[in-house]
Length: 302
Image 1 (cartoon, rainbow, N blue to C red):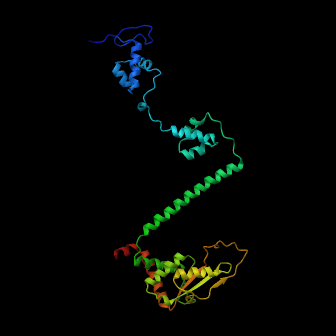
Image 2 (spheres, one colour):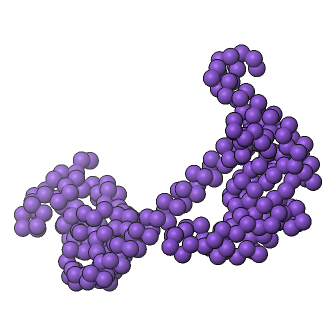
Image 3 (spheres, helix red, strand yellow):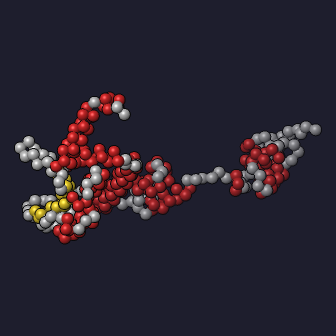
């Protein structure tokens, strides 16, 4: 049997109720269902209430069950933003810590008092901390780029080391001149890694260790003894293979930057009886130049 709508004026429902139940009866049943944890839709379907305004009045003052509440993920951010604002933090500082937009921060904390203006010293300190953070980030990016580049090298074949050594010597090694055809193999550098690669290249060429002589050149104001120990350990030899250290006179007027614990002077590596080796180096370099001029020709002879 179809339920008929009945008009009940004066009951606060606008004169519309479903079936024969009174407003108070419906309200009691709605609140009971709400207490059982039903949602609005479930109560509406259970009581066959098709009017949302009526449903609102039936549930007035009755809190919804916890499971129907929508999660508010920003509540914690809002609370933290207000806490930081009360500590005197600016919008920029709050944004830096929480990672949210300034517009959201403004809505959350606009009822709170503004922090007092910073003194020049405070502003300078904040700017300095920000710059230091930027420098740390740049340094991390720089080191990561270097690490990625180092991994690109991978295994170094004998031929690759051979070509690297030829280019290295022709860049940094002693070369003969038309006016003085000495043809000696002498390599000078202050970078221990460069010296390490050069010595590895000499070993690849079969140069015996007993044919090597070393000569340290360093400013007299440096720790000479420490530098000598450093280079003997680097080249795997003792001072008997080293010529007398050359000391460069210190000029206090000159603002040198090669100072401190990392300064070890320059090391000269000389190959005894190296005339023939020098001629081969010069020939190898000329071969590289010719091959670079004609890359297509080089590819055709692989």
